[in-house]
Amino acid sequence: MSDWRYRFAEHRGTLLAFGIFIVMFVIYTSNHPAGFTANVVQTAANKGVLLAFIAMAQTLVVITAGIDLSVGMIFVLTNCLASALVVGGVAETTLGVIAVLSTGVICGAVNGAIVIWGRLQPIVTTIATGAVYFGIALLLRPFPGGSVNEGLADALTGRVFGVVPASFVALLLVVLIVWVPFSRSMAGRAAYASGSQESAAYMSGLPIRTGKFVAYALAGLLAAIGGLFLTFFTYTGEAAFASGNAYTLFSIAAVVLGGVSLFGGRGSAVGAIFGALAFRTIGDLLFVFDFDPLWQPLFQGVVLLIAVSLGSFALFRVRNKLEWFQ
Image (cartoon, rainbow, N blue to C red; front, side, top):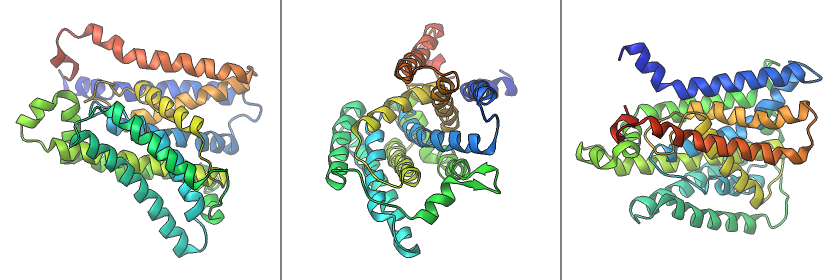
């Protein structure tokens, strides 16, 4: 296979997700009453980046051939925690942000430790830990409330140079700081290898346990960044069980739309981001075409079903397991 064909095959899912998002967003802005304006783009970006962060978190676990059903609850927990800690002056706010992000890393590390050293299935483990994380969130915020540093919130939810959404810039920085170094590191390669063929990767001497542990810990970090941004957008914290479940399910749809294989070993967080943005645009399209809001869960459910099915359809073309990872 020639070099360009190999690269195209490697990034095909990401390119497809990008194309779907662009088409949907063009249709949305073309039919929006305000048209393509900075305010419309900012609003869409602020809604989309929340799911994008959760989708990135899910991607890290999925590439190891796992599923993290606790990312939505880490998202909710860190939202509640941020509404209590990210307040006050510069020093207090900085310490609060560090505490929130550290909580996400700890939650992800707990998931990874149980899966790796406890040898339990990821789906069972994360259902249990997700319930624990939601319980802690409910203890922190039995009722919606709290606050956040308004200066920081406005800076990260506004626009840079009056045009570019600051939340999108923050998302790009997270990709460059978290995803790119991980994907090119030994731990990242081990995480991919464990998802494609763990026994072969182990025999090759790759640090499988380290790779999987780092992937889970970073997944918790990314979910915490999402929770932090939710606090910036809403100025409050709420232990919303439905919201946590919805973001978890939507993150699975986003990663598959973004070309990430649910069987592990293939895909990119960048593709998952475009998958998340495309999935979020569904609601926007229903708005501009004046559909009844009650139809939105139906359309999202259909997209979720189609997205999850796409990964399975590809297996029909595979003659042996090794071809799936070539």
